[in-house]
Length: 134
Image (cartoon, rainbow, N blue to C red):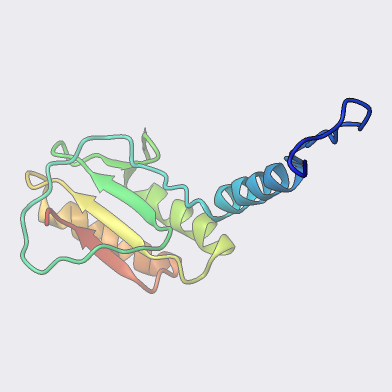
C-alpha cells in the first residue's frame, strides 16, 4: 500500500526554524525605537484659551509654558523670562529649524507671553507659535 510506511523505515523529523522570524522582530523593534519622537513636556498645567483654526506641529519642538501666575517654565522648572533665551539657544544648536511653542495660560498676562516670544526671537528662533485648545 502506498500510504503506509513500514516499521523499518525511518521517520523524518520536521522542525520549524524560528530564527528568521526572531530576526525580523528584532529589526522591527530597532526601527520603532529609532523612529520614536520624544517630547519634553513643560511640567506645569496650563489652561489654554480656545482658538479656531489652530493646527498642531508634528516635529520636535521647544515647549515653554507661561502659567496663570506669570511664571515661565521649561521642562518642569521655572526659568523666568531671561532663561528663555538660554534654553532656546541650546535647543537650536541641535536643530536650527526647531519650532518654539509657547503654552500661555488663559489667565496669564499677554505682556509676559509677548516677552517670552521676544526672547525666543532674540535667541534665533525662526518659527514661534502660541499653543491653544483646538
